[in-house]
Amino acid sequence: MGDKLGDESLETETLTASRPEAKPTSKTRQFIAAIVINLYAFSQGTVIGWLAPTEPLLMSDESPIGGKPLTHENVSWLGSLVCFGAILVIPIASFISNKYSRKMTGYLMALPLIPAWTMVILAQSPSMLYAARFIAGLGCGGGTVSIPQFVHEIAEDSIRGEVGTYIALFFNSGVLFTFIVGSYVSYKVLGYVLLAVTLIYLATFTLIPESPHYFISIGNTAKARQSLEWLRGKNNPDVEREIERMTRRARELDGRRSIRDIIRELTSKGTIKGLIIGVGVCANLQLSGVLAVLSYTVNIFKDAGVNMSPYAATIIIASIQIIATYGSSVLVDRLGRRILLISSNSLIVVCLGILGGYFYLKQSLDVSGFNWVPLAALSLFVIVVAFGAGSLCFLIISEIFSENVRIVAQTICLVSFWTLMFLVIKLFPTFVNMFGLHGCFWFYASCCGSAILFVYFFIPETKNRSLESILKELNGDKDTEEDNERKALKEEDKDIGQPGPSATKRPRRF
Image 1 (cartoon, one colour):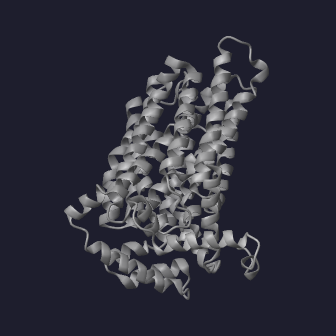
Image 2: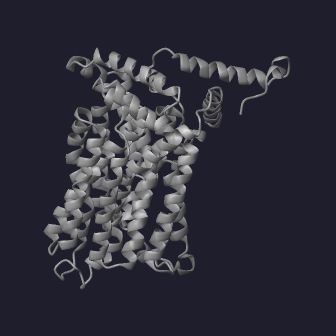
């Protein structure tokens, strides 16, 4: 397995090295645009992160919701109704994005967060809080459609992996921000702060241009060129080449847009394999248990008897997760997707196995001398999740479908993502009562063990590869020119590594 992964990494590195480097300044605005777009992901993170710091207060006698404590059942619905709202809005968001524009989708889908936070601030009954969380889910679901697609269409191939992981980085940053603010301010002040986060996103989103791919799709080449010049630099020679490539691709797709053609492509070998991969990486993320752990992390630390404030421990965990996610964004275009996913899942199994063992022994033995174990194991757990399963899910989904079926295929993947998230968060407290924390952790460990085999046998390496090359591999078609170049470079590197004349003709590429 190691040799195979090493060869894949070498192939992509040498291919990248053989191509001329783009000017550093031509990428600056792409990074800026990706950051602005992912402020939406930050807002999503505040929605998911809100429950952890507020749960103990909501379940106390000093509950701000009518002065009556909420039950465990109430709280489980507060977590899961977000997912239910997201499931319902995803087809709508996909339609708007395809029919109108990526930027309009980014605006419209974030708007529900405004009434959602307003209702959270004003809520005096569980039912009003339920409604607020459902509406917040509408905003969150729309973001999982618009963010990956928009970022994918503005970024060049050489940085697509890095900016594609920003959605996880900013989402986790939103969770941490909410943990920190929620630990120090009142319930209502927290609501006002998180409302302001959404308003800041909507204000800054006006600063970036529409996707050039969208302009090409509606035949407005002038606007597409203007957008690309803003993103790549006005005098960048790559602009005209990209315009030509996108125009050519749009013409090819125009001839295959009938219902029959789309159904044929949806049922093709490549699309079906892509759907298996897309749903698989969604399941990998959700069944790692990370979102359930983050949603109930304060109570987990209380049960573990950690010798520090559960709120402080939670903030530490979220901070570590952000650092690890940033590390993933740096490494994903260097090491590749497969290596990170396999390594991540392998270490997740170890961490969850240790956590399960700790809580199992705690039932019958005195483990007070080892209450540092949950904090250490959970810290390592969120690190390894962030390096692979947690940061690469949306990136991979955005890379494996052709434009003709991307909207439908990604909708299927995202509905599965939020459905699994709904089930995991809703059922986590119930499963803890039935099987204990140790049983839940061991179940998630077994799921990630299965994911290792899934990644190895099913997921191709997409690092620094064009969409055409990836689709050819998924369909099992003949190699593209790019694939042939990759193979030639690999053979060349093997020759260079052997003694003889070939070893002295040129230095080895790095």
